[in-house]
Image 1 (spheres, one colour):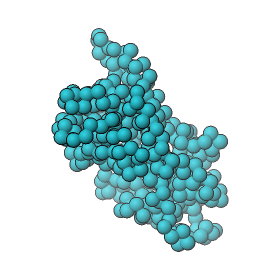
Image 2 (spheres, rainbow, N blue to C red):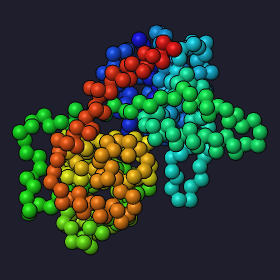
Image 3 (spheres, rainbow, N blue to C red):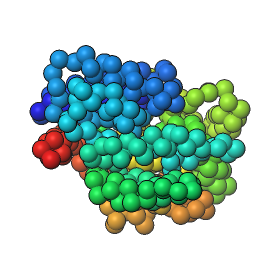
Image 4 (tube, rainbow, N blue to C red):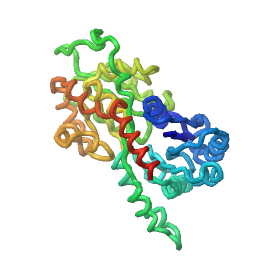
Length: 369
């Protein structure tokens, strides 16, 4: 089967899933992509026109079109109807512009939410990266449509729900494995070495780094020793709060800054004992699963997709409800013996070695329909 994969914002998890699946698919996958340098807003507005031009130049007709949520699929379909009409198309939602939380003081531009809505309406099938994402998007649609005084077309929400599927992103976890297992990457745990806390989220408002550092203040007030690994991507490393946090925690810091390579990132994960999230936005949680795969115990908020990432029996010890709970459970987590193989087993099913077959089967079924 020939799959045409359209990615107008080819970076981050969007690119990782597209490239990861193309390399492992049982089907033939052709990627048409645009770089992220144009900015996500321009890609959502103009990417469909450019990708339609590129798609019209292809020799082979695909059996299935897969588009990311950044594509204005309705426009793309209109511009390629004479060449690709009748080819089923699905849209894969990594994120959406209807429920993504905004920073303080910013107003939502509903034109982008509308592109997501019409893409879902146009597609033969809608795929979400998590069931949390599916539920939240469908729950928000009536509010978007209800803003208009007539012809709200609320029945289309049920139509979209009926053709919705959940397919978690495959993750290249195997690339994190140590090529030389005998090599010692982290010092042995002794009474002289406090356990390490990992932050591997982006340094942005939706990940709430200030809440993370507030929890560290709580640990220090309790006299709980710890080391610190801050590996998240940051937009502006000279932001005042970033500089202040680095100076405040300098005595505990073992690493600070974005890891330049996959190997360097994996080495940092192996050194960590506990991975913490304070996010208010997470449609899936790839970074958390990468850390769990290399043996980090997770401590995550009881919201978003996090409860679905972990087996129910781990919720009591790995999910927290509020800032006080984060401090309390983090102190306990740092006192527990490491169980690295146990955590690895939680994340392993998301590796592409397992996930690719699920993609193959769903895409084949959608093309057959």
